[in-house]
Length: 418
Image (cartoon, rainbow, N blue to C red; front, side, top):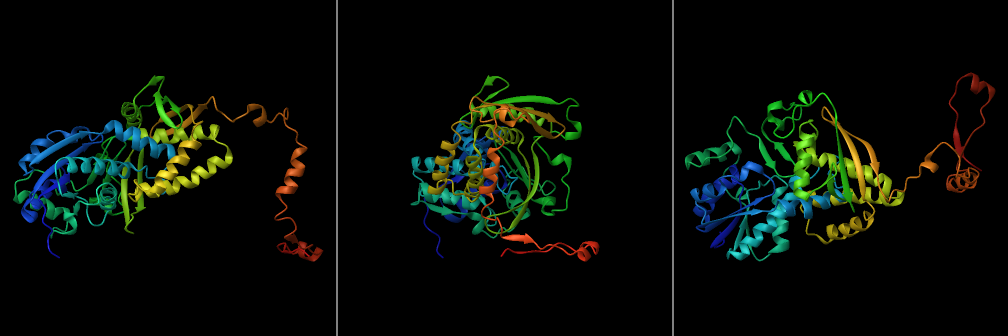
């Protein structure tokens, strides 16, 4: 297949191993200019020096976009409100960031006259799908270049060698082989010794959370306020989304809260082992679930739980800009209108436990929940139970046992009625 003629490509740039070598690779193989686009979604110190590094490795232009507030308010909060957790454990930190990064990359590409988009995702992972589905949704006319699906480099070790041959400094060594992704929500750890699912992670691998054994010996309580399913307050202080998450990250991290070690099913069908640190996000997920137990009726809550699984799949699979996710978003927004209130959690040695919840929209009635029968007519239950049991009433009956069968300890038999 012939190589398309490209004049200028916008690269989703992080300064990590893959994107550091992609700039010279694009220039060598496509003879094109490269615009490096870095999107700050909370990588902390990882954005320092990116401009100088991008130009040093051959970029013709560089853009650093601060998207932390948009990431928290328009992406993370929506995933949180939906209750979306992939395979019951993964809180979708990387998955949620990718469509926003791709969106900003496309905006820069169109503004700077690029005719191609490029990323550093491998041909095995989920991120290639997430980036490219976003590209197709937002700028289908631009050519997509995925170097990991084209070049002869076959491993991270070979990529490190490629960088060394061109004197490109990279934040990875063969002694430190972990692949990490950090943002405002979490940090993920993959690769290296973690590829053995029986390997117990070394404590030195963790970057955000303190070893629970070294966490404070006294528990700490944190009170989180929500409005319409979105977090707005921590310990009585109203905070903007990004600042709120930073505050909760700091609180949860010092107690070792938010670690998950899981084997997940990638979109491409491969099982992958990842270790995630999501301190503040873990508190928010627990708190909102607790608030929903007060403010959502049974049918609404159960339906939301069912659709949350599908919402999580859509985010994990890179279908953020799909009509179905937007439709589910509308459902979530409506059903969580009453999710306003406060939840208190107690943090201690790696655990977070809900210890209190209040809401002006609470459906909980202490009078009805009490063992005191005041305010409840127990006789009403008789008719209700008979009607509720009609679909199964009489379908099976126990065959009357003989005295000999009882003495012999035989099991009672069930048979259809009539």
